[in-house]
Length: 325
Image (cartoon, rainbow, N blue to C red; front, side, top):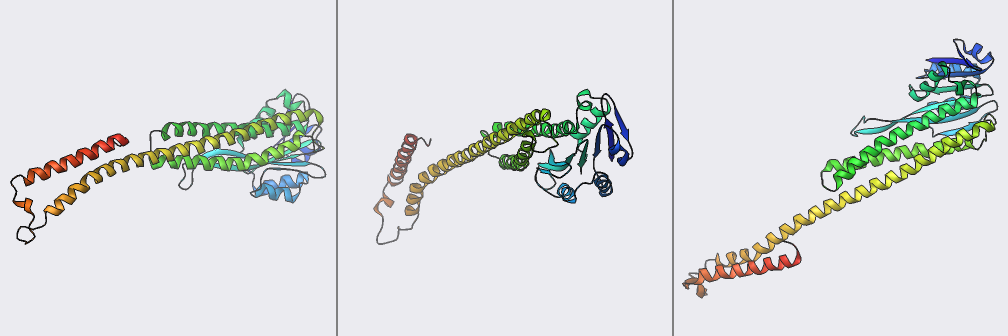
């Protein structure tokens, strides 16, 4: 769906014809959400957008800023946590949004619904003074800003998952816990792959490299750049926290295994001498010329039982000294 607004001052006027919207006096903003191929071709033709920029929008291309002769192209990705399509509980879903900034016009194209951008468009329709009284570069800033701000919401969701994991790792050795840890590590990796290029793309705007960015607008893009720096730092911090939680989980599993091995060692050590005595006395030597003399001894059986009891007591004392019991 294509929406076109033209504003210069206090009101925004909607247009149905893209050519008339571009020719109108003021700032023209054209936004296409969930854009079809036909809609993209219509916008491309009306504003003479380069086919390479359209290909970048359709392809899986990292965030970037590129300058063309009459406009600047900024490509960012919206990100959100969605239910996993395969075996994962959550996945980071991305969708490209292309922003084209001309001398007196802005075009934003999204292959998804791009809700953050739609909120800015709705604000322009309602007569947002800050938006209507500035040029196209400020409109581009507002679009970029809402996309980046949505990254914080995604990080908040990941932070909640990390807090739950930190509570579980010290008391649980279930396989589900390590699965949650791996899911969060994968989400952070996917997020980081998008946040780093976005920081570079916005950094070019913050420095005022493109000629379409006015000096008075650079400070707004610098604010967005600072947010992206903070987002990247948070991502690295969360990765460290998840790695620490993973180490704690592995240590907990190792400690639990050691406790089990201690018990098995105690049991096995106690039964080894008992098994030896029983094995020896279980052999039939009664009719053998090499008869065991204690077989006919009246106190043979009690003596053997007392001897085994002493052996077990000595072993138990040794294990207590070693901290196994």
